[in-house]
Length: 145
Image 1 (cartoon, rainbow, N blue to C red):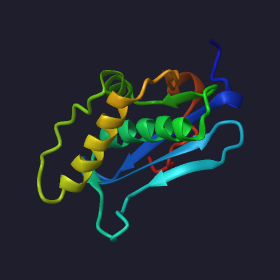
Image 2 (tube, rainbow, N blue to C red):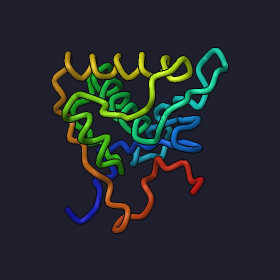
Image 3 (cartoon, helix red, strand yellow):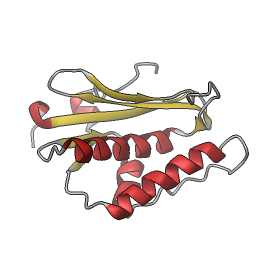
């Protein structure tokens, strides 16, 4: 392939302070660098979203897919640097080991909603793993390493 096609692509990434810990994710347009969406690390009520990086990556991909679907956009590719999240999206199941608790239950509700969306929508958008070693950090990276 020779590298990502910037003019027809979105990139997603997640960040998590700890594993598990406060989690957030975002998506950016690779052509313009514009942030398309951002979620976390707090819920609208101010409480912390407690999750893992893989969950954030999974939710970021589904968020991008849903946004493309809602806007009727059919010519984009989504890049993620998370092999696990891409696999989970293809299987329509977030196979996390995160322990269910009062603190994580709101996130599990979001995961269930994302899994339901995947089961009820035909995903035709290509989801490609970002090749960090060849291309550098994914443009959606939070830059906190």
